[in-house]
Image (cartoon, rainbow, N blue to C red; front, top):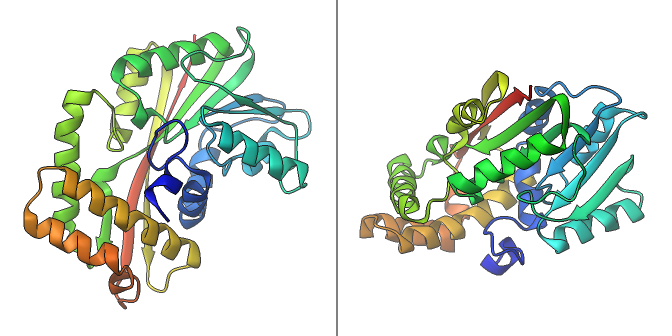
Length: 279
């Protein structure tokens, strides 16, 4: 998959539906367990803010039941077009309304929802934008409504038997550069509970999920890793990492089967779900 295919019209890398689908399927069990952790109730009205390819929507619809509703919002029109196509084809069923829009200016009245869920989106925001988004979430929530944030923790990322030190050095270099851009980044999962607490939310709950996929892996994992390695290689070449690391990244990006066909291949990654209640 090309870099262009991974990037939507928003300019956000790794936000295209096909990329997100492969990632979701590679960790479906853990991802859906993370959504269940929110304890969405039948009859609730739920907003999926930054819904991407819509991977969470089928379970979300199941959780709210026949008396609940789900609104799917994304900044990328092509992602919403794809979800609408799935709905029209009968491949995605339930009471789902779709909207193109920004979580920094939600197109909903005050006190509309019982819960706002947002998965792997906060990494694209600055700290100030995060605060704006949470203020918008609070505005559209009913009293005692819930905000649930799922975010990546790239400090746990490994592509064994590829050198985990090379992964860690790249993440550290990207994190150092993010200090200048102000973006929260894909390592921000562990910071979400404290950020929600500072935003005034109550009854904060949080949990980390560790995803581990040993060989033999399902096709979705092979697709996800095959797409991820060229991206990681490009990121290595753009940041302050040893030239020997860049050479290693280029080697496995050019031929992902070096890893994927290794009998001891193992993908490891993690994410955090943080949940808080408005007063």
